[in-house]
Length: 137
Ligand code: ATP
Image (cartoon, rainbow, N blue to C red; front, side, top):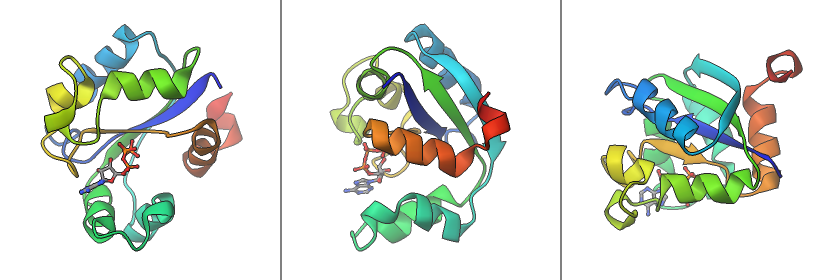
């Protein structure tokens, strides 16, 4: 697949990191194909993260993701899903490699600055979740 979906999470948006994070994404060779600023309702965050339902961090995660505005983008690059996960680094910023987006910008494992799709199927599902057809020309 040549696309992935990212979310600049609450916290990173509040800390004025939209610009710096988008710059890192572009420097990593990704092209922005669609972009929006929005805010999830709790119920929508629960739907987005439904695969994690029942896990101990699910309630905190969905509270956090619906707590304030986010920026969502579809990104294009060859091998997008895997290369983007490399660029953002491990879920926990303490374990993330030097130079990765989470190492640089994340505050904690839940407040970890960005989301990246974990598969081509997720990238499609997540793009359909956030963007209409006219927004993804
Ligand atoms: P993402 O899906 O956001 O790109 P990921 O693939 O690195 O992150 P997942 O395992 O899919 O991580 O978990 C989704 C999100 O849930 C993580 O980004 C993180 O914010 C949160 N999370 C995952 N595991 C934990 C945990 N053990 N404690 C707290 N939060 C967690």
